[in-house]
Length: 479
Image 1 (cartoon, rainbow, N blue to C red):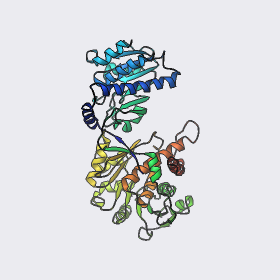
Image 2: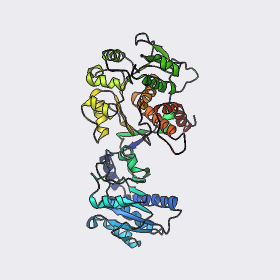
Image 3: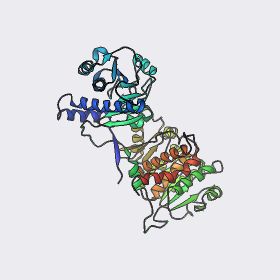
Image 4: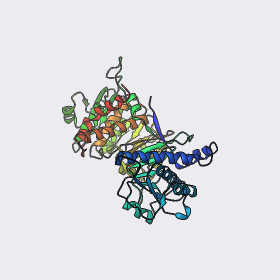
């Protein structure tokens, strides 16, 4: 049932465009793109100002095809009664046919923004790299109305989403033919994404996102013949005298994710049982009883006893998730996990990733997480607003959270518990990681907007919204 949405690199899109040009007449793809762009701009004008005719739009036009898309779209808007002006940032390299079409329709060229109702960013397309040049940056900084970006916000890297200087922050991005990595990796710069089909035949994507409704449909729920053991029993080693809350949050995440049973091993039994008496506590891994997967690390400590407990868990033939303090231990002793045959998931944030690898993820987070997964032959979930999940031999999965509400202490402990429950239920590690990230992000958004307007949250309300988040996703499927 799980569906995916693909994101395609510049090279993949260029290859598909080259194939398209062999099947359609010259100029057809650009006119399809321009028509779609004009439709979105018109809809935005109608929504924001109450009409289309009589409104004003300024085009920021660079060289090449992206500028051509904007100019042709401007000519179409002009025929609908919109006052359209274009600022040519490279007049000598402006798209000749697009500029001619704009002028024939009554559009004009100007050197200042004027007082538009909306601005279209057609400065650079997917071939562009680096920040905006000074003149473009000056114009963009002066814009005080909504911006609709053609294909991607100019100044944002199309493949990595990196921003290293002045860039457009769009309210809406109209992408042509395919979504690009930038649309997931730099979502705050893109605004709402609108896809305009232009007839591309695309390859299998190397970056994908799980469909939320598919996550809901595939989420493990008890069937007619299930019991607490068949639903999955997860063992959790978390918490310490210094961090008892980590144990509460991690076990709570597993319980909320509808694990059949949660077994807890650690020094926080009193606090854990106070919050969730259904959890079964033990003092050691050896006496914990049967489990189908292990979670190790949140607040668990980094002393020799913690190291030995991690080694004991990793020595099993069960799926293991390692987080937080467990990652610190692995950074010092990678041999504990490299070469392990059973499914293994690491869940670092950027700082933990740097400790594991000796370097920051850098601007190309997709390449970085894929490299670690391939080198260590396991699944890696790299946390962030756009969470990435890499597993050897598979596309990288991305979950764009839609906000940064989960950027709060303890939120990662909840995520580990949810993911551990999915591993115990027998779900494949990469899917489990991406699905857990989807539910976790939605729970954070629900918690933040439990009151009007949205407000910062802590990990506890996030935890309390895990089950509503699962229910929300399942409701999308009619389950």
